[in-house]
Image 1 (tube, rainbow, N blue to C red):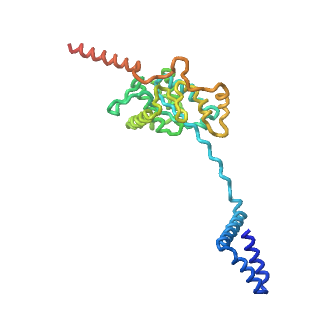
Image 2: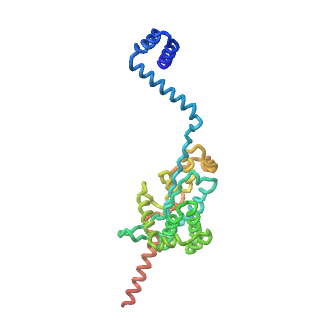
Image 3: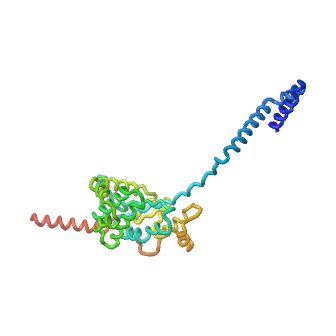
Length: 298
């Protein structure tokens, strides 16, 4: 190679210093080489020397890049606190994420707004299941804000929704004592009006869903809604996970027949958008009270 040739010529000339003729001969050979080729050889030699020196001295400091952790599967749960299908899903199905380490591959996001309507003033809200639902939605929004870690706010929301399934939701404040939680962060959030601002954020978030939600529970895995097949959400999560090793629990959810996003042939376990029974009851109540007032004036 050029590097070896240059080296040997210089070495040979240095060993034969006794005659000026031999030195002239060596440099004459080098001079006869094209200048670009000679420079290239010089840089190759220099780079090779530097590389060999650094590799011998710094080899112990070189480490292979560690493989990056596989991205988690995103799971969005859009709900309202008093929809019976939402509370049942959270208490009986969503909680399974915390079994067999499934939560380790999931990025769970809770959004307590659901089918709630926002009046034209963009401030007043009308909840599908009445005023108490508005309260509990805001309570759960405040809990998420006060305790951002999933391991902190999920047990509280689970406790509240468990009471909903038992028709004891008016006892929701007992969850503080049951879980040994300080109620002040949530009560401050409610009294300061911050909870209402949080709910408006969830309203905007829910309105931005694509495709738009049609009912609740509305469960979304990696941006794809599961529609009425939401109870099979774990099988979708396991199939969406791109990591090398999925939790052992995935085996029992993916070993059976492949799930498809099709309409389930049963009565729909959802609370649909639109006028609800509570809206009609509120309308009847208002009409009845108005009639009493008018009658009293006659």
